[in-house]
Image (cartoon, rainbow, N blue to C red; front, side):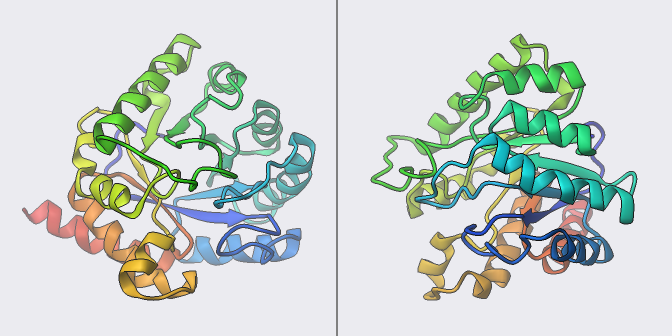
Amino acid sequence: MFTNLTHPLIMGILNVTPDSFSDGGHYTDTTSALQQARQMLEQGVDIIDIGGESTRPGAEPVSAAEQIQRVVPVIKAIRQALSTNLAISIDTTLSAVAEAALDAGATLINDISAGLQDKNIFSVAAKRDVPIILMHIQGQPKTMQQQPYYDDVVNEVLTHLQARIKQALAAGVKKHHIAIDPGIGFGKRKQDNLDLLAHLDKFVDTGYPVLLGTSRKRFMGSICAVTEPIELVTATAVTTALGVMQGVQMFRVHDVKENKQAAEVAWAIKQAS
């Protein structure tokens, strides 16, 4: 699905967790999760990203068995009740969870550790011939915001992602099945996030599709002087528009309608330019 992207894709976030930073506890049962998926579909979502483990700063890891118990019923319900061809990504770092999710109907893998947490996730992607998104993170979610540091964040994140791409290719993942994510907010200071957002074109220049995930992130709240994540919908849409103008192809968001509008207007302007 990463080949011949003709317009920006919106990936809707569906966390079936009790403790995610913005929507934790909202969709912990299949009925509420299905209702949210239906709303995102009505708003024009391109991909639904389903996760069973919170990756907010300070979050504790969740076992593969618990993640599977959370995500598989939701994936099956979406497939049965809503769409047989919708792209569904499984947001996990564990190969067993990825395998179970693919069996249930997921079509791609979104790994915030880029194969560092469980190298077998590359083997799953290769064996199942599915796309995988490789994200940069410094440390683990539990500790990633404890004094992260970079000398040159853009080049360091780029170098890291290129190394992870090399490992994925060596494991048999096809080049056209790989996308990358600079990992905004994952082991980054506010200035690091801003530097990455200002140089997204360097990630686009790798030739691999880029996923941007800024949705409701805390660093924007510190700029806008707000503390509630839900108040950062407009701020998120601004970063989506800026990302489109720099060539980013995919955007992982909580608020589909607003970000789809931002992406479509920015795309039209970019085409005109």
